[in-house]
Length: 364
Image 1 (cartoon, rainbow, N blue to C red):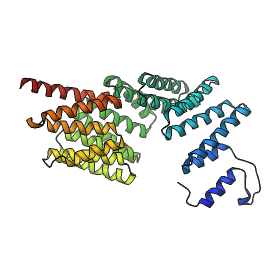
Image 2 (cartoon, one colour; image 1 turned 60 degrees about the vertical axis):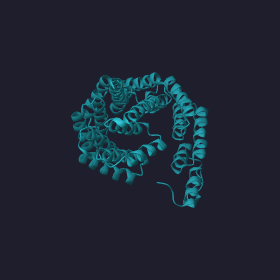
Image 3 (cartoon, one colour; image 1 turned 30 degrees about the vertical axis):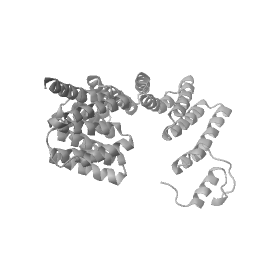
Image 4 (cartoon, one colour; image 1 turned 45 degrees about the vertical axis):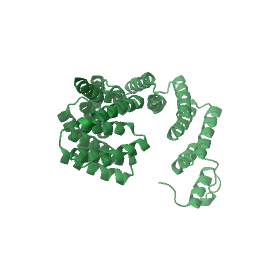
């Protein structure tokens, strides 16, 4: 946690800089700058953290320790990543990876390849993202690093899922699940099941989606992962709405909302509001809550949830002749959000609905 006493914090900083007098131990010389980095990072003092890690890079170069230099550069990348400075993060990660490759340090490469892939994905460079995940997978297999292999396979599955290649996604998830079960990586099992449930939902295999997400909730509770439980319950709620199980959906959103509020997750709270809003609209209670949920998700930039809300809204609008045009416009806007946000998987739901509406309008 964050230090509460500024004077005590400063004493700790002084200690790490070499002053042990506060502990009656005399002067011992400065500690590894990485200790200072970790302290400043925990306190949110990013400029000081940068300074400490650049010192680490200099030390690594001075003593000829390439691995130390690579890890220091990689952690500079992590800081830039946290601050949303993606180009700077990518530059630091790339330098770290080049050094790690030059000295044959596979372990160091595995630390940053996944982060590089994430940045490429956010920048819309999909092929480079997939290549980074594939490189990570190959390295972890060579090393016998099973947890890393599961993570790489899961990420490749997510890549295919986001691009609407559902069968390829399942191939990756199945391989990941087999390894996770073999080595009892319970936390990874839960996440893989959540992703599998989402794919079933995209494919409109609602009963399979329901069963898979229910199992994912059990696994999430088993490992006491509140974020995963929240995620699984919210998406089970959306599946139950499509199955016309309104009361069950409402229960899931209530439970997810409790977790989200306790954890201070605004994006999850907005997602739950969309769920509650859809249920209210189906029950004939208007669309005010749904509109609020979509608006809040827009402010938070949560494209995945915005799309879900817009699709749900369009489905309700499609039921009335007077709002068919609004439904069509909503779906087209949802498609734009899906395309720009990299959620091509949603085309599997959006495109058939657009086609259905357009046919009805032509026949009129």
